Image (cartoon, rainbow, N blue to C red; front, top):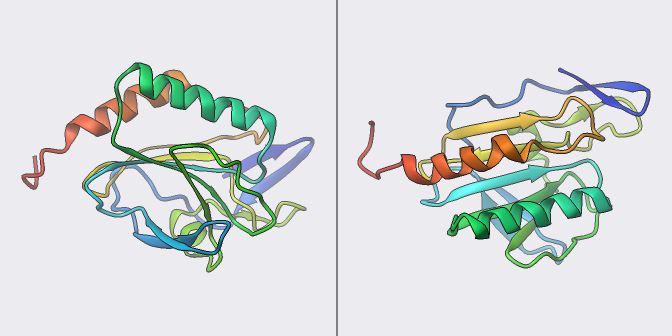
Amino acid sequence: MQIIYNTSTIHLEDMPLDIGYASERVTLSNDENKPFLIGGQSGFTQLLITTPFIDDELLVQLQEIETLLNLNALGGITKALLVASTKHASPRMEGWLFGIDSDEAFGDYYGIRLAGHELGGEFAKSIFIVSKDGAVFYNEILPNLEDSFSLERVLPKIAAAQNCYTGKGCH
């Protein structure tokens, strides 16, 4: 997959994890180096957002997502902003986890690590929605790192992921 940043074309190191596949439960650490698990079957819908950089535009969009989730009564969702390295500082948003992929397991498994370029090793700008049963329900990897997420597509997918799993095995 090709991704544009400024005037450069960047590639992903691997193929991204696709919709319908089981997500891997991986350990990340927060900015205080405390580990936590993300992905996999957790019994909660998970909204995982990755980024190569944290800027004001991204923070505004995360706040928009939070507002829309609250307005639509979509609670009980694990929300996480994930980065590839410790060079990023946590934006300290209430209700959001901040995860650093210190051992590179998340980036490798989900296939969103950028290759080459000055951003090599960082994550692509992406959203993964993992359903309660651990399946990738939706993903969006932005083709341009300066683009915003399509909240018109994301919000209905979050709602559907929240409501699709019955806990009784195969549908």
